[in-house]
Each structure stands twice: as structure tokens, then as C-alpha cells.
Length: 167
Image (cartoon, rainbow, N blue to C red; front, side, top):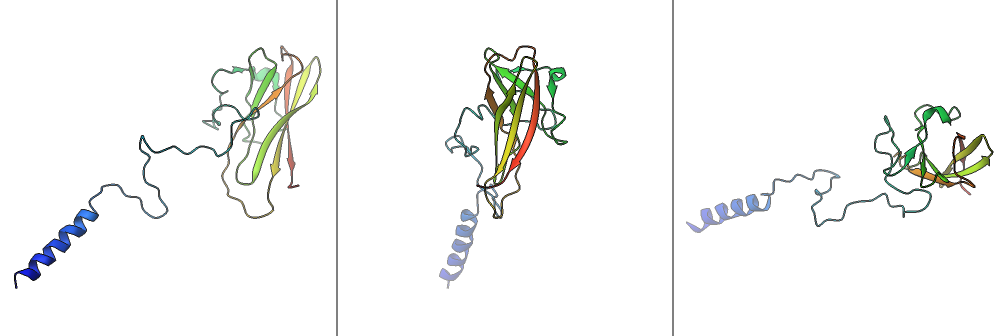
């Protein structure tokens, strides 16, 4: 008869040992990252269009590390919708300019210089919807880069936006 209480106590101790971790994952959660666990990345391979980290703080956007900000007085972002980052920067000798695009879910952001004159450079940000199906609602602000024919110098950068569909 002493075997039954011993088995009961053993089962309770075994159950407690199995639940003994103090880490809670919960529904849909993931275990916490450890130093030997690889960290998640954006999933996009690094390219000339999106070097550096994504926008850290959309409320107070800053150029990526190592970039030189273009003064706000030389940036015309009036064609962009409210809430869109309006920061422009140069890299190296000023022949490469950058700005943040808006992407996420099924939307990819790219940029190109559509006009380069002695007074201004027009940088068009294109947001392309890649799918007609349902997409996630995440939003990211990837840094986009454009190579100019000559260093920016004192020219104004005009930011424009275009939306394109799949295909």
C-alpha cells in the first residue's frame, strides 16, 4: 500500500520538474533569443538600393550611420504624403543620395533619379505592390540609394512618390 502514495508523489514531482522553467512562451510566442541563437533579419539581401539599417525611429528619422544629412532647406518633400520620412543624405563624395521609402507586406520600395539639372535632382520613390492576394500589414522604411551623374553639391533634392501594381 505504500507504493501507491510514492507513485503519486513521484508523478507530481515529475510534472513540476517538467514545468520548472521560468520562461513563458505563451500562445504564438517564440522563445527568447540567446547569444547562440541567430537573430532575425529583414529577409531582404543587402543591395545597393537598401544599405544600412532600416529607419530606427519614424517619428524622428535620421540618416544611416556614416551618411551626411542634406539640410532640410534643400529638400522638397511636398509631394510625399503626411507621415512619410523626409530625410535625405549623401554618401561618399556626394554622388550618391539616399532617402527612406515605405515598404512592407507585399510592397517593395525602390528609387531612381528621374531628373538631374544644375539646380535640382528629382528622386522618385516607387512603391510596387507585388501580389494581388492578402498581405501582412507591417510597414517598414528601408533606406533607398540613387547614384547621381555628379555630386549633389548645393542642388535641391525633390522627393516624389509613385505607386505601381503587380506585373
